[in-house]
Image 1 (cartoon, rainbow, N blue to C red):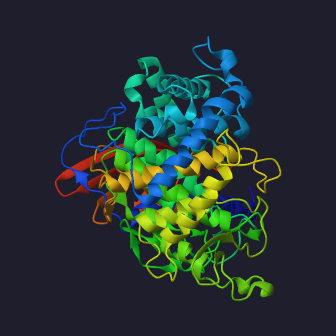
Image 2 (cartoon, helix red, strand yellow):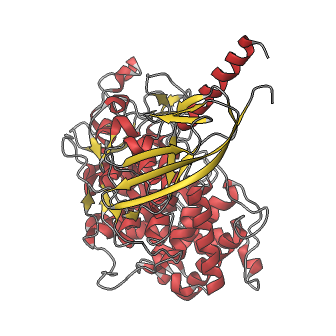
Length: 569
């Protein structure tokens, strides 16, 4: 082989090796995970919600009263029109599991969001059978059947089922949460199917490369398509996996990715160079880009899109209830930059996007300066102008988390203004539905979308009322032992290859302390030499590479065999 070709092959191999093994991002995090002195016991079981000392009385604040009425309107629609006319599930009353009829968003999300509506409504005593005209026990049976049927139809339980879709983590979170609320009401087989859905969908994100609208250099990666709401909803399943299975061996892997997804969904361009810590992650180290504009707006569907500005807020802050039900504190990541994003709805002059709207804001104000339910879309909207629920939920969450502290008009005032519109829209028919033919919202699942926002709003209000929304700056990573270590090497190594060597430890130890002591040894230095952390293949042959990792009095090691090939091989 000529020297030129040999050098080219060395360069290509070295480039690949450096890409794959040259940098351990997690090792560089400020975030510290404590190394446990002793072995840690793991189990895969779901821990049921502890209902002791939780107040299940219906909330009675002014905003909650209207919210409960709106939720029961949606309940009325769900157990009547939706069940019998839209889905025709009454035709399957004699079946233990419903044949759900597909695996697309139109099918799975529709069912998962209505199951969630009923599950929360029933568990938190909102459901009013005198209003819905369907007995409570019948509604409960509907909900249980929806949840277990969706779980059974998932590909974790049925070959070729739904799942592994760009939005399926979102739907799976609905199934998981509804199932968790009524865990003791499911048989062991159904419990296992629900658990497997959660594990399967959460595991998808362990090695997931988090996407960004804009990279660290400010270059747009996905033109007109923020990944803010996508990252936020994917984190729903990792949050629930951690809350439901706090003793699972993958808990730390899920939690690390969970916090990365949440933080990335809120990231501004200036955050990529920031030393600020969020749950002890240094932003410039954990972020590979941004998803929110510096002014708090969001670009999606190729427009400045308030619907998605609110989506990232509502998706993320709903997780406060998941943490609460798991008996956990709430990570500060859930409200990181949320004040900037929310206040932009009220205070940002949208004349910067449209000269005709100079002096206007996304959230309209009445002539006297008070809150109006009207929305100004800076560059238009593709869904429709009759949407209120995403803004209403954002308003209530902003009130709960004090995101409006610097706003001239307060979030709760906007929420009250919208509540009047919501009840008025629902009051146009006796079915409880929000929309009528001709209304401006083109989303096919718009009634399910309404129900989803209503029930999530109540969830967070309820969690706050129970004193469960306690913000923490902790890492949320549990201690793990230093149990095992192995050198990490490429499959093919050739004479002349030279690259930084790395290692891996047991997977539950996600973040390594900086003062870890690491040494590498070659069993035959005529074949491989390792010096200052650099692996150099000297000669053709076989030898063993050992890594020894020490932390205080703790020590572990591991050895792998390596073959050095000649380029003529």
